[in-house]
Image (tube, rainbow, N blue to C red; front, side, top):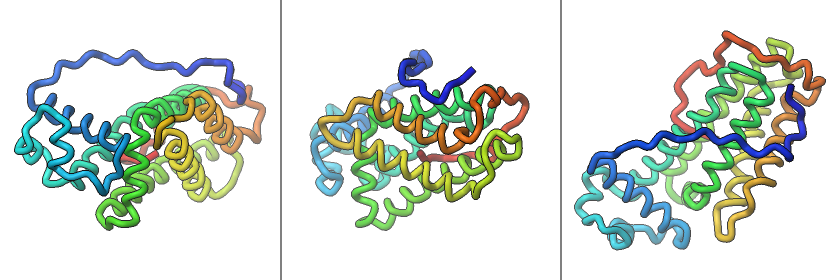
Length: 235
């Protein structure tokens, strides 16, 4: 069974299928990749359609086939990021297996994704206070994960796996800790090593949610789903 301290165990990464993209998907992906590369060395305020597309082999006019402006581009990047994170943390949210193992694996995947997307997270968190549209999107991104994390905590409390406390404030605190930590660690060059960040988040989450119990008593729970609504994004 699980133990709280897992620093000696490498993260488990699922093999990803190789997808064949059509021309339209490849063009969109090229624009998104260029935006991420741009944000590694430039603040969002310096991004324009002209400066971004000048770094690609795609025509400027192609940008407008997918996005109205760079704000809509950021919105699309945030939505894609939320979907990717949700894909990998759903096993813990749905509770199909050992609670601690699933949580640790979910956090491993979160750190892996955010290590790659660090400059985008830094850019949107920096830009949000100055752009009302981005601020709303960023807060919705976080709030959606607050909801599903709180639902999982409440479900675990009902099963006796997690101590009794107000679930939502703890979910918010854990979620914001994730956001702050990965942005500070991965938002700028040089990025921090992912291992210590992963282990820190695992320790915080496991000790907070399951630390009041002997981990040998946190048994796999089958047949219960805690993902009660579609979550378009969040940490």
